[in-house]
Image (cartoon, rainbow, N blue to C red):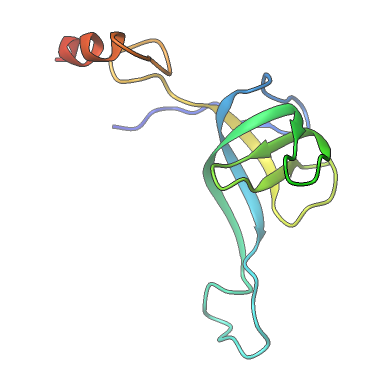
Length: 120
């Protein structure tokens, strides 16, 4: 089953602060001079990653404040196309789909068990 995703250009509109989203990210895998040109290293990529968006993102290690950035679970920060320069750029973003059989993206606590039992 395929779900239709509405992709939004990151240079036209940004998600709300704290949003968990899907991001289309482009960049280039790092390579070494002696790498096989057919290997993944040193090649351009464009792929989908789950990420979060922050209007203001404090970097704990340095105290730096970064504005309007996307970050993933590994703490890698990426910027929207047309924003500050970075090695990997977010070209588009989309809202995460709802949970199966639900109209919400997340459920916490005791409601989880009830929701799972209600699934067909």
